[in-house]
Structures are given as C-alpha cells and as structure tokens.
Length: 464
Image 1 (cartoon, rainbow, N blue to C red):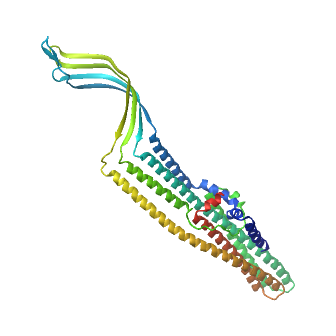
Image 2 (tube, helix red, strand yellow; image 1 turned 30 degrees about the vertical axis):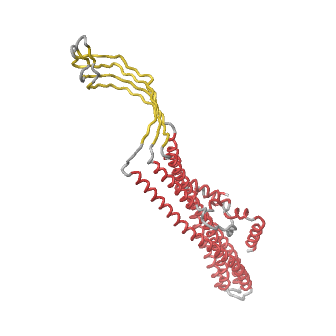
Image 3 (cartoon, rainbow, N blue to C red; image 1 turned 120 degrees about the horizontal axis):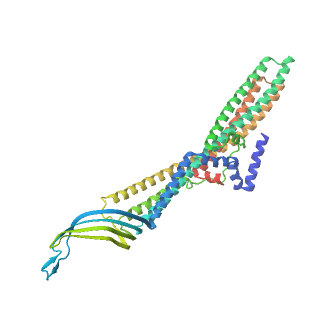
C-alpha cells in the first residue's frame, strides 16, 4: 500500500513539474509501443488495405501517363490479290482516230508489300478529364490511407486492452500470494497452538480450506494468462518469450488535454477525402461533353514489290499486262492534329454524372451520421472517464480501510478476541477491495484509451 501511494504521489508531482511530456510517456508504455508496431506488420487486414492503396497509386499513374506521348512501332508484310474497275480520263488520239481509256477498265492486280514505321500520338486537350481523373484517384488514395490508420487504431486498442488484462492477472496473482503468505503464517501458529492445547482442529481446517481456495484461483489465473498471451502472440507475431518479459505497473491514464471534438478521427478524414474525390470525378465526367484534341505523326517505309497489273479488253491490243519490281515510299511522313467529339452517346454521360451525384450524397450522409454518432460516443466516453476517476479515488480510501481492518483483525485473532471465521472474513474483504480497485483501474485505462480512440488521437499518441 505504501509503495502504491508513493507512486501516485511521484506521478502527480511529475505532472505538476513537467506537464504534458510526462503524460505522453505514461499514456502508453514504451514496451507496448514496439509490440503494437509489430502487430501492424503482422495483420493481414492491414496488408490487404495497404495493397489497395498501392493499387490506387498505380491507377493514378496510369491516368497521368495519358498526358504523355504514346509511341508505337509497326511492321507489316503481306500479299494482295484483287480485281476491280479503273476509270481513267479518256485520251483521244486523232491520228489513229481512237480514244484510250474510254469507259471503265477492268483490272486484276497482285503484289507483295512491306511496311515498317513509327507513330506518335499525344492528347492536347481532353476537357480536363485527365487532370481531374488523376486528382480523383489521389483523393481516393488519401481516403484509403486514412482507413488504414483507422484500422491501426483499432488494432492498437485491442493490443493495449489485452496487455492490461495480462497485467491485471499479474496483480491479482500478487494479491493471492500476499494472502497465502499471511494464511500460511497463521496456519503455523494454529498448528503450534493445537499442539499446546490452545486451539482446535476446526481453526486449522478453516485455514487449510482458505489456502486451497487461493491455490485454485492461482491455477485459473495461470490458464487465463496463457490464453491472453497466446492471443497477443497471434495478433502481433511476437514470441511468447518476449511477451512474458513485458511487465508494467497498472496506473490510471491521466489525460491533461481533454479532446473537444472528433475532427481528428481518421474515418471522418477519409470521408472528407472521398468527398473531394467525387468532386473531381464529377468535373471529369462533365469534361466528356467537350471534344478531345490530339496531335499525331508517323514516319514509315513502304515497299510494294513483284507487282502484276492486268488491264483487260483494251481496243486493238486486248489485255495489257504490266509488271513492276518495286514501288517504294521512303520516308513516308505524316503529321497532323485530330479532333474527336462524341456528340451523342445514348445518355451514357448523363447517366454517369447522375451516378456521381448520388455517390456524393451517400458520402455526405455517411459523414454526417458518423459525426453525430462519434460526437455522442465522445461525450459518453468523457463521462465514463470522469466516473472511473472518481471511483478510483473512492477505491483508494477503501483500500486504506480494508488494510487497517485486516491489521486490526490479525491482532485481535492473535489475542483471541475474534475467531478464525471473522479473521478470514477480514482477509477476504481485503482481497475483494484490492481486486475491485485494480478492476476500476482497468476500467479507467480502458475509458481513457476509448477517449483517445474516439477523438482520433490514439495513433498519434502511440507514434510519439
């Protein structure tokens, strides 16, 4: 009792002298911070959400790449065989009194061809669809990162709660050991008194029963401790040997700078980012009404070789067969600017814009609902935190009374003024009061952690 009261005194003195820096150190034990960080790397849900973030980053880079020139190279070899009609201007020859190329000339043509070239295409104007789409994906990525932080806070809260439960079991074990020591000491006295005819076996049996009950509690505590440590091991990936080395004193968490609102909550920030993403997405869809302007260019080599052309049924000469070894175009240059304007898309654009508007309304509604619920939860947690602080003050007084009553009962029992039942009742009261006190400390710590979590300050506290 004396050492615990001294801890309270020195903690209060440190708060007065050093203020927030001490509070920041006392809120989360440094030993737990490392385990919490390890749990972030071990959690599969966080891994999946982080992969979603990486995926969105790549999507944004993909949209950004549309602003850059797209260069492609092609090579084509083929064989052509075609029949058709050719209408050339009529050429009159007075000397021969005849007209060449009169009417449509049927022809047959075959040839091999080869083409190789490089082409470039770059968007000049897209109605701001590319920059707005890129910004929308960036805000979506921000929202996903914030949701990762929200998950981290939940995981951290669970780890802290589990460790507090382990420390509580350790403290209960100490209470049991203290009671056991006193009872064994009294048992020695009773055995000696029985040998001298000053006590009866009933007192010895009552003490033995009480000691056995404590032994049963110790066994149950050990089983619960193993289960808790195994749960922490699975959640964090830290070995049991390392977890068993972590021990800290259960002290109330003192929050000097009381949270006033929930504006730092990661989920709300994520909804804000989602709202901005929908705004950019809306602008992007509106930009689809405008034309897309692009520049293009190409340089190629073309060769048509081993060509045969037959003009049929020409006057005087009949069929005319013409051959060529090759027809080459080098280089074949092409430069220009193009415009693509989707004037009517069957209502597709209007439908997409309406969908974005609905998504915006859904997002705004979710945000308003989350703010209301979190604000109410913050108020509840503040009340719970204050209530638990008051209960600890009352519990501290109860500890003093129980300690004093046990001391008096021990002396009265030794003097023969009370029987063994009354002495064991005082011992049991002392155990219950101490157990209730540490249970109140656990509840106070839980309320403080919930208060930090509700206000969105838990992860900041862990990282600093």
